[in-house]
Structure formats: C-alpha cells, structure tokens
Image (cartoon, rainbow, N blue to C red; front, side, top):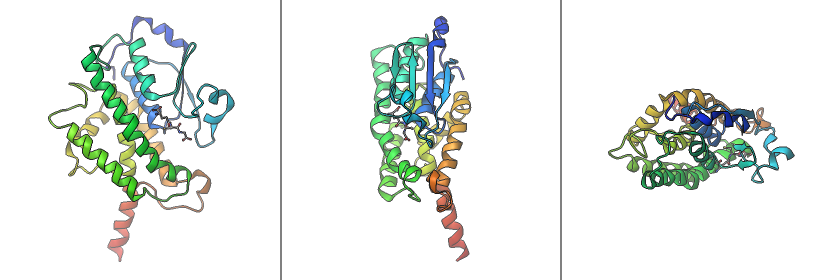
Length: 255
Ligand SMILES: N[C@@H](CCC(=O)N[C@@H](CS)C(=O)NCC(=O)O)C(=O)O
C-alpha cells in the first residue's frame, strides 16, 4: 500500500463521498486508487441488486444510473477513470500513479481508454446476462472477445513488468480491477497468457489489492455463481467458467 503520497491538503477529503458497490470492478478501481494513496473518504454502499443506484437521490447525480459516483463539494463525477485521475491530480503529490510529464501521462491515458472502451463493454456483455437475465454461462462470442483482449494484453506486456512503466500506475490498477473480474468469467490461462497471469499475480500481492479488491471480487464471484438474484431457486448451476468447467470435467470423468 502507499504507491502515492497524499498532499497536505488531505483535510479537503472530508468533502468527498464515494457511492460504490464492492462487487463492481469500476468501484474497486477507485477504492484501490484511494488505498494506494492512503486517502480515506466517506464511502456509501449501494446495493445494485436492490436497484438502489436508481433511487432518485442517486440518479440525480448520475443520469447514467451506474456506480461509482464521486462528489467533492460541487463536483460530481460518474466514471471510474475520471474519478481516479481526478483524485490523483487533486490530492496526490507523487507522480508515481499518474506521471505529470505529457508522455508518461498519455501512456497511462492510453491504457485507461483501452480499459474503458474495450474491456469494460466486454465485461458487461459477458457478466450482465448472468447477473440479470437468467443466462447460465458466458456465451461463446463473449468468451472469444475476452480471449482476444487477453491476447492483446499479453502482447502489450512483452519485455515489461507493468503496463505503463516501472511500477504499477493507475493504468495497472484500472486493468487489474477488471481483469481479476474477467478471470472469474473466462479464466486467464497461464500457459497461453504467461505474462498476463504473472502480472495479475504481482498485482494481487499489492497491499491495495488486498484491502480494496479481494473482498469485492469474492462477492462478484459468489454473485455470478448464484446467477440472477431473483431466480436462485430455479438456477442452481455454478455460473463462473472456472466452476462450470470443473463441474463439466467431473461429470465427464464419471461417465
Ligand atoms: N465506464 C463506467 C462504467 C460504470 C458501470 O457501468 N458500473 C456498473 C457496475 S460495475 C453499474 O453501475 N452497473 C449498473 C447495474 O449493474 O445495474 C466506469 O468506469 O465508471
């Protein structure tokens, strides 16, 4: 923990509130960024399954009705990438998480855009049918799209320990929240993606991963396994690819 150092103006954080759900990868990215800077702000848990994010007092802050939402005095932000870069630029004096030089900063931005425009939609396409639409498993097209993203990420890591520099930056943090989550849906095969799986392992040893990602990831994994919250009784089969594949191989051994 402590990849960055908080500015002396930390008292300003008493005006900051984060509305979040631990199972959401976007929220966990913000939580990891906060923990890596040793910053603490008011956090409000919102239950996505109960639709609390659509309550009028929350929806008025975010017309998109998604989490996370950050409010800092009059400023309201509702995209995890924008929230992370705002918190670092506003409250962190170190440039470790987000370089101040234009070149270094644009390399991090590039990864954040990849995360937001490629990985996030693929995560939603794979997870939402299971979370909300009674689908029992990740559909083949979604597996293909996610595997092809893994392939691209594996190439990006050639000759590198981290995606954006010599240590984990906001780029690695954003990727790590979503990739640890995608790993539940479409496991990252160590033999096909050795660089990516070693990177994820290194990230999982960071203090901020343990404090801000681990618990929510477990919640997501359990939520995927019980499928659509409203139909627990009907759909009992495990939903994560890992468990589903394990179940199938056990059945095959028996036959
Ligand atoms: N690009 C946005 C995505 C935000 C987003 O879609 N959040 C999800 C949770 S991970 C959400 O609130 N979904 C609403 C729902 O599940 O009903 C970000 O990075 O903040």
